Length: 294
Image (cartoon, rainbow, N blue to C red; front, side, top):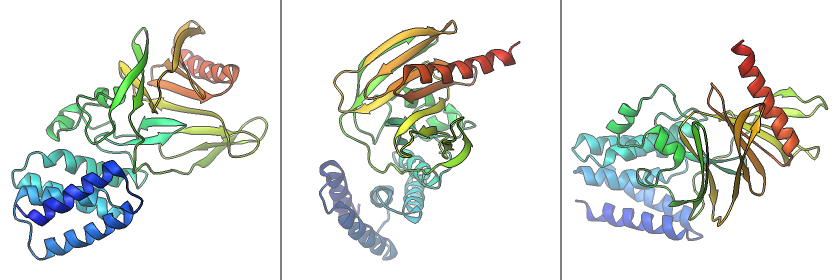
């Protein structure tokens, strides 16, 4: 084992926990030194490549994350099985930062005032995920602490169940890092001529008349029996059920309102501050579904 690579990796992990103000500069210095060690032939074992990959995984550029993926893959090829997970996660981060769906569904981002699982490739199977030591999509959508790695610990503070869907409000012990911001493109206008935006995560939203404050946002989440509504450092959040056009729905009542309703496409999550406007949009989705079935 290369002891310097291990020391640099240990420093990286400590800084990720403590988040010192000069962390970014220290990260850059570590990456520079790791590349020097690699160019000098200082990595010989799988664990060496894994230590190097961890440091590049906490980088700033597409090249950094691609390097992390390649280094972790090399580690796994040398027989270090633990590196397969890191190789998959690094690949997902590289894809996410390009605005593309992740392959394995390992990345979480800030979206609409909460934390969501980033858009992922629906064609990747759970068998493939198991091969790369990453959680199933059901586990990722419910934020299962027992299988998710590399993320803050989450605890369920509220739950509510309706037929075929359970909602858990999960409070993280600390905020996530490395969450990119995605700009939206205008895809239409409201009757009062406000633009409707959509970004690469398929998050749709309308701002209030000030142009910056969220008025209404919506997202279609792939179906799973249990879905997490993820927040940070929360102690209590109200959950309640109701019916809309005869269909059961779940409300999350926090700094904003979020309605969850199951459809044949997945689960719609609609966020805003006005019950009536949220229900009107949800009803539109339900009627659209019913129209296809008649």
